[in-house]
Image 1: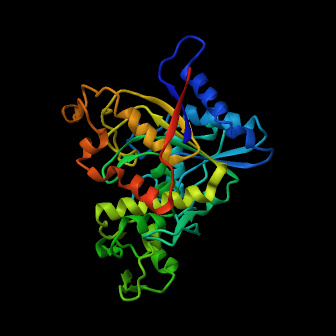
Image 2: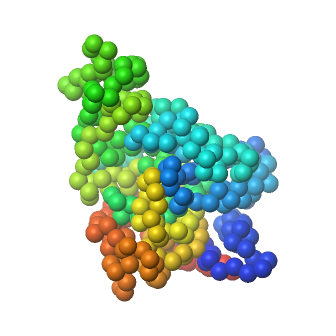
Image 3: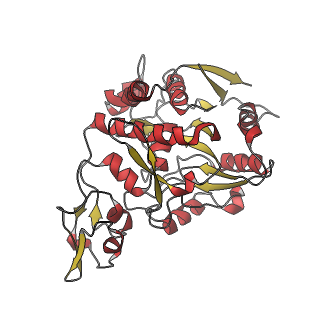
Length: 368
């Protein structure tokens, strides 16, 4: 039985949401284990440009203050994206972080891309899964001595919902690791977009990329589908192959999540912000009306039980009248299964429990 701490959204004079969040952090006892000089990662998602649904940076500031109060050194971090956008490389990612309020001036901690400038920095971590024996996790998160996951809980078009498990799996994977989870095929070359920068040629580990008349060419007989060329390309000339079947994809996400969870062990704390619960991921360059009313903030040491508890609370919340999904989620329902017509949303839980024996049982302790 996992203990999940919870604080609702109700506030009063002298007990603001910021104060309630501090109480939640201290109640978890996680901060008692932080020691002088430790490097503590605050794993965030700064939001794609155009999206304003991400976690308010003030919560990251509070977490950073609590870390520094113990003499440790916090830093904000996230991994670069598989798709081309405002977070595809470390330079653009840092700019987006600053634009969205995740700056040293506002949070008191620097933003450091976890997998480097081009998303190539990773180490392999073992996992005895159905789909993977090794995962490619970003070096920056693995090198932190402790890590705190600050996760905006929301819907997701492929996995049904995005919570701590998604922040662990896609969020801690290098670009190559993201491609492993997403793709059932090798990368696609779009010659018309190629500018001949040779970055893909330089990073290919097996020499599958050659330059012909100033354009990159992939030899698919040699290509191993590692995704390094996708990570290196800034011009959308090389894109991921087609996604796998939904159930396989969700199982792969669960295996990556377990790999990171098992690696971090007791050095990790997971926090879900179940507020502004949008139907789409924060990777989307816009955020729609929330599907249900705000629920609160939850924290725990087991991300599988934490996500399960968060979903259970969301399923009891009132639907937002102004949401385009309102008619689908009134009454008895599983909110995210209804929003995305995706009955596989719980498949990740089932796979993690059967494959790795993770616990989904929890006891909810509400704080005032």
